[in-house]
Image (cartoon, rainbow, N blue to C red):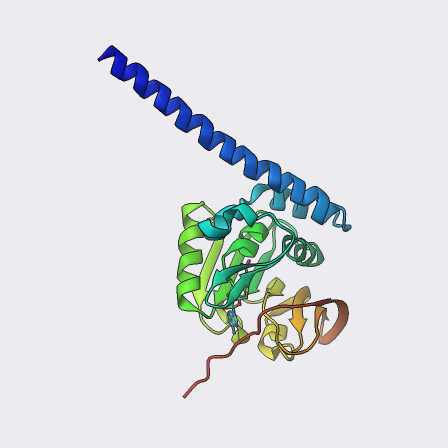
Length: 235
Ligand code: SAH
């Protein structure tokens, strides 16, 4: 009996330390990602950096890609979709200029990672995903990791989410040929929207949309490559 319990303790210890070191490895990779990919390219917003440091990106990709979760690029998340490159997530988050009291709408939940990052900064994140399987998986993941201030809806994000509008910030993580008018309409006065604009075959530009009263100002930021914003074709 004694021998057995000693053996058990040893086995438990080995399990404990190996999982701890696995955890450590991801934490080290994450810190490295922030330094080399994000701060090195000019992201300075403290809230953005802290959120990126907090959210375990490796848990938002499938096991197959876990070891590459902190690499400098996008990764597949199934159904032909991708989780954005860490730098792009940070860049878009910083540009939204959001603060703790804000309510944000995201179009294109995908893995749920961008929503999780935003949820560390703002009061509430509403996010819409058109592919049911991805939306449901993200919803489960976010709940399992206790991101309680994120709400996921399955649907066509082109129309926004009227019920909770207006939003302090709107972030679109799929490329649209033009800025969907319902999203402009659901943006608060002095609100900001970040959206990749262009077709999937040509260069897309990340655009900043600022609303002041009835006035809309758009600014082209950097060339990007996103999966297309698809539409539910209504019969
Ligand atoms: N923000 C995500 C990455 C998104 S990839 C993340 O952090 O992982 C773009 C996502 O937009 C895909 O999951 C795609 O299915 C979704 N999408 C495309 N068109 C959409 C639409 N009209 N409404 C809502 N989601 C859409």
